[in-house]
Image 1 (tube, rainbow, N blue to C red):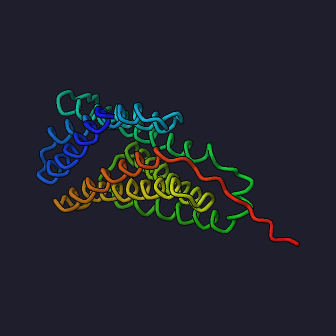
Image 2: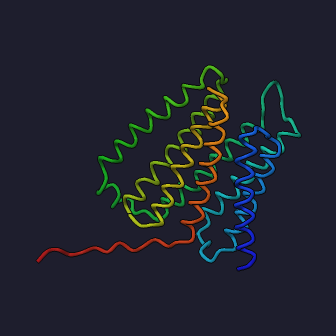
Image 3: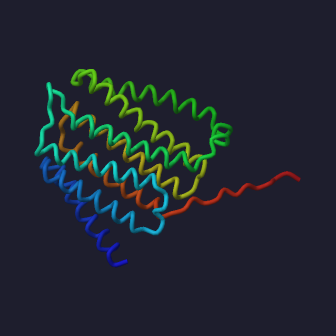
Length: 240
């Protein structure tokens, strides 16, 4: 208990430091803090009593590895014929981490019930997802090579799928755990979109501050929901 409390205090301090460093654009120290944050959060999650489901742990591990690679890229440059291999490895690891979150959601869903209850909602989400992914990726098209554009497109598809699956999961279960998970995915989505705007559209300080805060909040909600269990749905028989 004492170790867990100490880890939580350190995480809060490091989170504040991370946001400040991102605002000040001190990238190297910000990457060090970010990697340290995720390592400590992974340790804290592994120490929790309700950490039996593997997908959230896999998410934390792959996300942490990607952040560590981002830190390494400040000191080691892996270029060949103007191709930044760390960029691709890091982004595909991020995608894999989000896929683990999608699997964590779908593993507790009953697809027949979801398809029966929300057919119109699912169709609307697919249409909106295609529109949003295309629109978002097009904003950075002029600054990307073909392979980078494909990577960013796939990245945005995975993030949008995660948000849609989390929404359907919350609509299906309607409990506190699914609500916290959905809020966490919303913060992930907005953080990713603001990072895209920050790196490819407008390099503004307030964008760095906001997407850093959203990222910290996302992991906070993911940890909070991991400490809860899904509430069983009570079906009432109203027939006489």
